[in-house]
Amino acid sequence: MLRIMTTRVAPRVFQQKMARSVVTANTESEVTPMLRYQASLPTLPIPTLQSTGTKYLETVQPLLTPDEFLKTKSAVEDFVVSPLAKTLQNRLQARADEPGMKNWLADWWNDVAYLGYRDPVVVFVSYFFIHVDDQFRRDPVKRAASLVKAMLSFRELVER
Image (cartoon, rainbow, N blue to C red):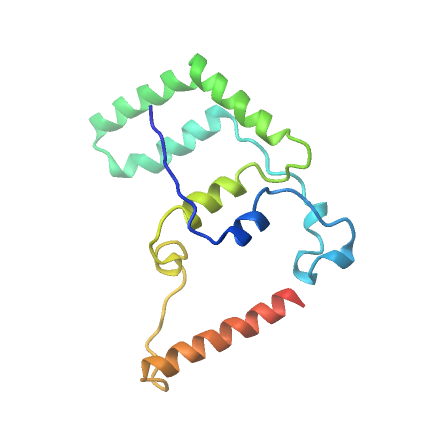
């Protein structure tokens, strides 16, 4: 049985704010302009087991030898029709059906991708973020200050 252990490393106040992926704002005045349409978005659908299995096989095929891929394909096909798969799919559906649940994946994603380990998030999670060599700010302190200033400006735009 595969078990992923996660530990929360964010301060408790942030954990409480992120406690569940539910819609909590009742009026548009309670949310920032960037999120004003959040409540009207449809809920995240649950993919079928067949769809998940197919996507998994597409993902791993370039990484496996033909023999390994055949074994993996057989294992996936066996799993998709197994009682365990049906039980897990039903549990996932039950989670998605919880009252107020808008995104059954968000809490798990936040725990695993952001809070579950101590590595730098920007470098290891935000794959499209890079630090281009700055010819105008060679001093690391000035560079850090410039980055923080830019991030705060962005935050102000998002939270207006």
